[in-house]
Image (cartoon, rainbow, N blue to C red):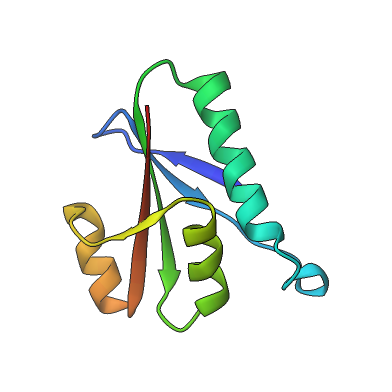
Length: 97
């Protein structure tokens, strides 16, 4: 799991998560997403933040993991719109106070 800091929007992070093939389908994705966001908000950020993730539209398992972790589908982040459109992807966002 990696978090990428947005240098323009100081409170926005993009999450990048990959699960090893041999342990996929066990519910680890949503648990790791929750724990990662919790660690980020407690350890590194002293203000409200927005965590966003991009998932290919055919990757239903990843989409479900983001939703189970509390993320909601969003499509209004302008910097991501061109990528989402070009790559047939979905964006998920989670706001942490």
